[in-house]
Image (cartoon, rainbow, N blue to C red; front, side, top):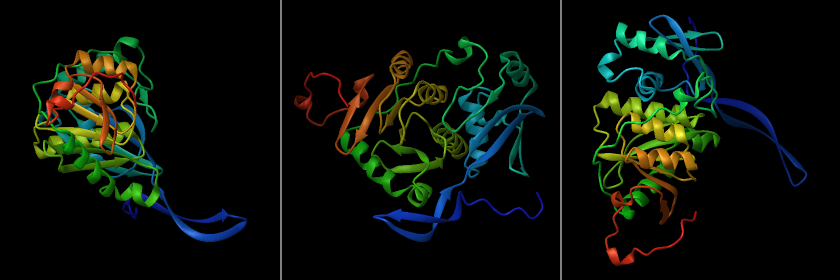
Length: 283
């Protein structure tokens, strides 16, 4: 759109803060949220509410995590168009992939809090995930290092307090990629797209989420071969079941020096095996 201002992910707003009976006028940064429409081969597919940054990563990550395409090379063309009130992302994919997408009969109107809105059949939502590869083995200090890095690597959340992040760390816990969005699913899709564009092997690291680990977050991760997923909050029972079926290690309540490993604990190795003891799963 001619004359459109570049997106920064933040919008300044003058507000009145009231505390202890006193009012203070100040300018506060709010997380930017916009309607992002995805079309495939000219056909509308989804409208997501998202932070309008890193949208090329988002488009590729969404197409991969939803298994619309099987590889980055199948995204033949990408175009971004600024519209009044939102952004349109136009994706071109091979004809055979488009035929399969039409067959799924999916009409999705996304929300920043929902990853499965609009699915017409239960079977579409609960489709089986690919089985994870061998992946990596990490030790608790690597997860702790990644968590410390996560706190320092979220500029949008530091300014607004209103966005989620998905980060990629190597086996030593060094953060290599991070994406933010008002929607946790969108943040993960952006990260998946960034990994694909950079040619990063998804078996050589792990994903760290600032949200809970819900079923669809596990499903998206499994779709692109991620074998270890850690979240700072709890998983759902269905997420744990899917992760186990997919051979994925799922970690929840990753905070400080503590975490809970729900599935495939062999990928989380203690330096001293004698420290492992049987106890009830707890947060």
